[in-house]
Image (cartoon, rainbow, N blue to C red; front, side, top):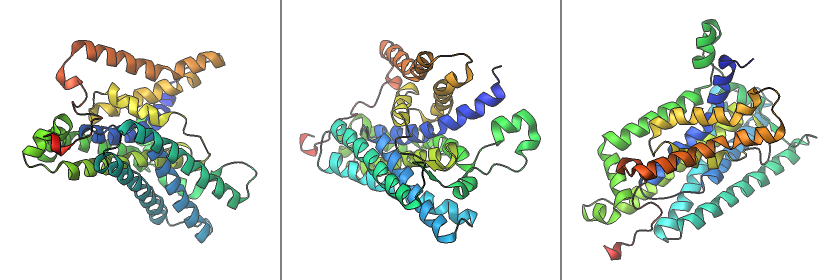
Length: 328
């Protein structure tokens, strides 16, 4: 029988990488930068965290100190994602390269980068199975609240997750508050709508674009780390991410560029993505059709919002367009 108590936690775990990616992409798009390299950024963030964790576990023989086991892959992930963000910002903001081309190139590069170093680590382990198991580090990431098991169904649905699940929700809420309620958020949105006007008002467009792109990539990179350490129980396999990076970009459109709505949207997308696992007797073709549901829902939302033509439901006006100050 279909059980909500079993389904909802799985949907939440499936949706958190999407929430990280969606929040990061939303920040980037709010300043007019369409970063289609988010799948690659998530991949690089994940493999950098895996490398840091692998080296630490090897150095201490598996006897890890929890706080250190968390900090090393966490910081390594942020560093790798930051470098990807700086690269994207340099190419699209400073050199004014086409954002679509750069984003797609970074996705290809990020996946190749992750597969190369992932394959290299697999050779170092000498394992017959093409994967890397970081069980000690994963256990630290997945440690839930000690009283979760004593709270029955409530504990299972709301309290049975590692700290990164709550971090994803907190980042989305804080991001939504900053974008809508603070001066910095107003300036970021002004750049995304009309960078020439923002520049004339004294806002440093280049600085804010670099800042938003880099912060967005770092947040998105955490989605890749979450997938490996929390969802996949510390197991890295090449090409295991599937289309989650693209789902995160689709979620931005579905949630109308609002990170707080993305919290519920990510759980919905996560639930739709794994719905086929909870439907008995579904054949292979039927399961693939269920995996199409998140994209189908996104297309429907895009059609509806386009027909309604409400300004608050539209993307930033300067999204994807390079800014030439000389044209101001």
